[in-house]
Length: 497
Image (tube, rainbow, N blue to C red):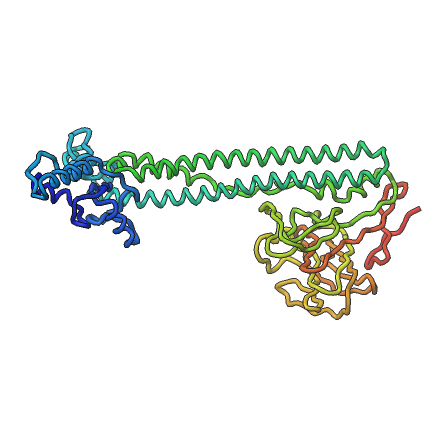
């Protein structure tokens, strides 16, 4: 082997004969260890000679080059290290470079250009042909680099969308599991309440459980369809991403041959709409458990306990725990709950299950004389996620001070000593909400406003529990609903004979 051939078999980094030679996509070869040491000192993996970014960070070993180097070392050893004679072996990097080059299918010339108009590789003959008249061209290396960067951006977009779909799928699966737990819990409560009633209520119990199961089936099927749709979209996105990644690892010429199809695939996928959390996906526990005993009693015409407001657990912030009868709330450790649109995430708030935009409504709440709490009403349009600065009317206790607040109006310090039972009276027609101290039968504060949408009772506690007190009710022969209360300011209902 000649000295010229020996120079061609030397690594340009260590200037010695190749050891475990690897070949990059730009067709330059280096010792495997030399290349790794070079990359270790650089922030970006580039070719030490041409500074291009290779298509793979794990380049393949060149077996042809390795065999040539081993043959040269054996010949040098046999001759005692003397310079080798000329050999007929072709320079390995030249052979590797030739293997990397593609030829034009029309003119059998090397593809050295890229037509920007047709978005395809071309040879020098193609450039001068009628088919490419007045077209713009770029060197194939520059075009490949530019289009790889463009495709990389599209790939990142697809990867982000894939994460979004996977997150939404996980939340949907959690919703199904949470629905199962809600169904189990609700069924237990329904059964327990029915045990306290007479045996002839068995048919009513079965009817309500059937309704619950029907809702479970409907919402489970809805979420399963949602999950299946998400799975299909995830599979499609994953397949597109894998195909795009394979295209990016291909050699420049092959990459440019397939670029139009790859780019079209990536352009189609971002047109998919982003997944949305399904509203109303959770079991409507309040519908099945709310005022359950009252509704049954209304059919039986007997005295029962009735709560004017039922808490909706689907709106409760993750630290809040609702009692079995849905009439009291306390704070505890954070629970793992589905990300449903109805739930608050920044305030320790739970809403009543029913909103009001007409009529007169009142409810009594047992509060603590210390700690931090607030109660009142809020508008249906008030956002459940993040901070809210307006759209609610409340009285609250914080740092030992009672205040009335309705931003953006300034808060007012209330001249009260201690509150244990508070009545909230909402008069929609007059646009008033009043708060009364039930123990002293005195008015605490009144807000005046225009009722333009439904108002929901809301309860917030950060320490002690809040409990909605039951009302005593009766039904006469005409089935008119009456309420007997110790104190009912502004209005009262009397028993009819």
